[in-house]
Length: 317
Ligand SMILES: Nc1ncnc2c1ncn2[C@@H]1O[C@H](COP(=O)(O)OP(=O)(O)OP(=O)(O)O)[C@@H](O)[C@H]1O
Image (cartoon, rainbow, N blue to C red; front, side, top):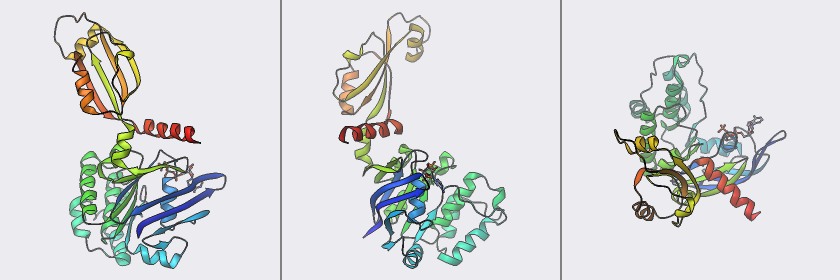
């Protein structure tokens, strides 16, 4: 049985089609990332699968309970943790009071362990919390009853890099222990660190659902190569190179890029940028023939990935 099954889910808000026949499955034990830019429809799907709003058409099930069957969903949700985006806790309550309330409904067998990990000032009133402290309280609340499935809407928003790293390790440990995790994000690199598979949504429609490794292989790398010679786009003859752009760099810039001190650099220099979908070993062999001043290899930006999917879609429609 899938932990989450979404089937033709459509949600309209008046004239706005926020989810358009969205379908995907999240297997039990999987960590699934739901990716998309602002306004793509992620929160709409999450709120619908959590039963906070009804679908216009289509359906979804959570731990086997159809979201349109209120009684079944309430029962299933005893085993689900949920972290909304920007959790809106009552500002006049303390963290402890919030956790006590949730504990009375679902339990809190892991409260102490999680508070040690995420370090929340639980004795203080929520209105004095920073954004990150509220988010950490939300994480403790989502996991403290040791649920089988945790659904999180942008869980790392507002977390500093150290806590983000702690969160990533924690998610990997939870997955290893068999918990199913569904999280939304608009940052591919973040999802890439913890998720097995991703679903990408744009303008309310699923663009792709695939394994993170496959997605990154198809998306390629963004390469910036600085060389101490005059190079044209046609000189980059390597398989897997796309969208080459060439910019001559003046002597001073070349010297700075090379980290050289003193003495003007007279040779021409070139900065090339391109997307690379080939074998990185071949890229390394290829650049060995140049006098390399700079080489950066990064994940392709998420927007480029989205654009490529749109291009693909246009071709096939
Ligand atoms: N209650 C609502 N009433 C009207 N329109 C809504 C409502 N909630 C969301 N929308 C619209 O539906 C679309 C999808 O919004 P949604 O919040 O699901 O996107 P999102 O992917 O979660 O975005 P973000 O990353 O910015 O949180 C947007 O155009 C949004 O303006």
